[in-house]
Amino acid sequence: MTPVRSLLTLARQTMLVMLIACGAGAAAMHQAAADQPAKQIFGAAKLPAVLPARAIGFYSKGCLAGGIAIPTDGPTWQAMRLSRNRRWGHPDLITLVERLSREAAAQDGWPGLLIGDIAQPRGGPMLSGHASHQIGLDADVWLTPMPARTLSAAERENISATSMLKKDTLYVDDRIWTPAHARLLMRAASYPEVERIFVHPGIKKKLCDSWTGNRAAMGKIRPYYGHHYHFHIRIKCPPGASGCKDQSPPPPGSGCDQSLAWWFTDEPWAPAKPKKDDKPKPKKREIQLSDLPQACRVVVEAPAPASEAEVTLGADPIARIARANANAAPVAASAFAPVPPSGRIPLPVPRPAN
Image (cartoon, rainbow, N blue to C red; front, side, top):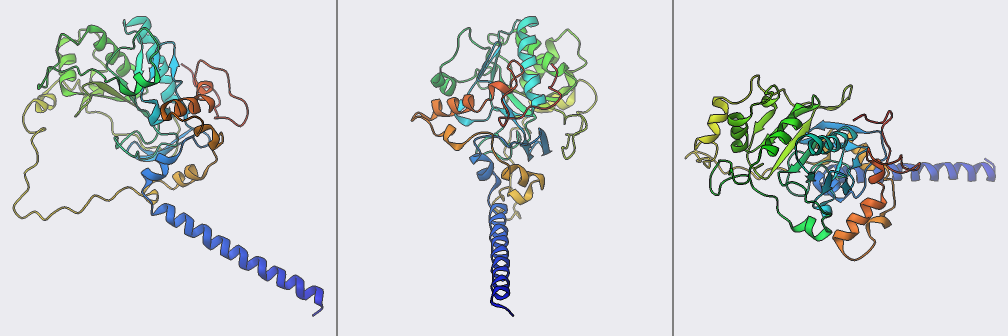
C-alpha cells in the first residue's frame, strides 16, 4: 500500500471513529433529555419553535410547534403576569381570544379582557400550576374587567383577580356578579371551535338559574374546581390536524341537572378517606420528555426565531421578559399587526380568519 493510500485509509478510519463517537454522544444527550422532567425542558424555553403551527398530543400531555404570542396590549385586552412568559398559543386560539375581546366589548358591555396563562413558548408541562395548557389550545381569562388604562408591569404581576363568590360559600355574590359576566361567558361558549368553558360550579349554577337568552351552548360550560376568579377556554383541535387529540364531547343537555347538583353536596369537596388496608402511595412520577409524543422532541430541538440575547437584556426580570417578548415579534404575530420579517415567528398560511 502506498503512503498516500495509507494516509487516506487512516483518515477514513479516523473520520469513522469520530462519527461513531459523535453519534454515541448525541444519543447519550438525547437519552439524558428523555430522562429529564419535561417541565424543566419546556419551562426553560424562552421563545417558540420555528416550525409550522401545530398542536401536538392532548391538552395535558403534549407540546406546541410554531406558537405565537398574544400582544401585551390590544384594543380590547391586556396580558397579565408577563414574567411567566405563558402568553403563547396556537394561532387559532390567539385569533379566537382576540375576537372574543372585540365582540364582547362591542356587544356585551365588557370593556376588555385581562388575559392570564395560555401556554409556554413551546407548550409542554409547566414548572408550576396547570396540568393542561400544554398544546396551545387553552387560555385563562380573568373575570375582572379590563380597566380603562394601561396597567404597569408591576400591576400586571401583583393585582389579583376578583372572586365571584360569597366568602366561604359555593355561591355567586350578586354584589360582584353582573349581567355582563353572563354575556361574556355565553358568547365564549357560543363559538363553534370552543370545546369547553370551565367555571366554578357556583358560576355555572348562576348561569343555569338566570340566563334567559339562547341556551344552546350552555352544556359547554362545565363546572370544575377553582375557576371562581377566571374562566378557562378550551378549543378543539384545528381542522385536519394530525397528532392532536380532542377531549370527548361534553354530555348532551345543558348540564343544569343532577350532575350540577352533585357539586353542592359534600362529596366533591371532602378529602378522601384512606382505607385501613391502603399502602402508602408511591410518589407521583413526573412526566418525562420520552412520555410525550415523539414530535415533541422535534419541537424541543427546533431553532428559535431570535437570539438568547433578547431575553437577557436589562436587570428587572419583569421588564426584561416583557421587552424580550416584544422584541421577539409576538406583536407582529397578532391579527392586528403586519406580517413579521423573514426568519421571525412564522405565521400560518393562509392567515387565520376572525
